[in-house]
Length: 402
Image (cartoon, rainbow, N blue to C red; front, side, top):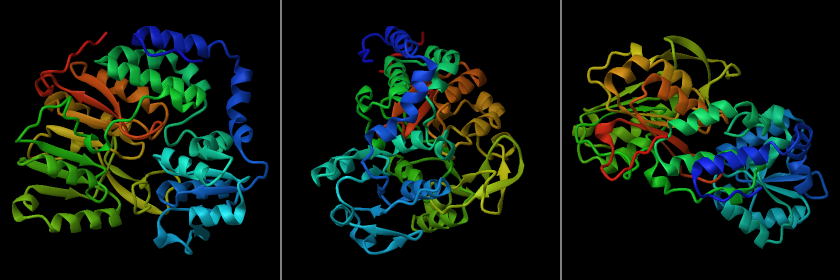
């Protein structure tokens, strides 16, 4: 299975050659049985991590008729409490109560430290959460960046198209890493993730601009804006779009603490960003997972296309982290993107196919962009596509689009 790194084009050919050596039947049997081959002798599961990902996994497992034993968590404030009717224990208490032969599934995005911790406690069957996705595909896939390996074979032409549009070897190897890892689910195929502090604002790619007009699509509680303000001594305008009411309240509370010169330059809009103006069903979770969804919780959310919004100043930098609606938002901003050519920083990990679909879409909208892929967390999480116009490229960047 191992292909090495070497030249990215040779590596991609080698990866697809290896993939095609496995029959469809063998592939299906392998990934569907991945969890059962690694799990403990009992059917019991402990979820390590009671945050947003853990809660979502709990809900999907219950929908599949599976009830975990408990949450294990390193936060002492949660020990002895219940989250969505599931008890939270310390890791050592969970092991003491349920033993070392149950399956411990790490429901944390950067889960390697937690997996090491559990093995240090003597747990024999420690699994990444994505193995659980393959176990219950109807409940979990294609969300959160993982799908059946067959999808990679089906979408080979689009993956190759994406490969050709990327502008450096780092990006092309990053694409190869993901194709290889998503087919075999072997962490050794992945390079080390980059510093998460640079997510959305990569100093090695994008020149700073003291007159930045920044648009934050999916502003959450202001986490990206905090990073922006730490980096920007000055800027011209900031537009923040956040449809979840609780998240928006947290964002406004944060902005209220800033000095007047900052507050006067910020506009907060309560819109979801998509391809048309109107309204849609919205799943409001009051955390990072809020999104437009046909299975929403009864909320109707006002939506806007970027092309139809009244910009007093044309954006120079647009970030999108909108839980899977990125392709629609890009399509709804086509005219704006072509006219203003802002830097784009777009998340690729909410659905598996977004890894190649989104770069291909950006390239079709405006082929003059240089496109880069960077990953800031383990597995497939926090992977971002940057579309950078020529005048914003750091001078040391060598663009070698094939």
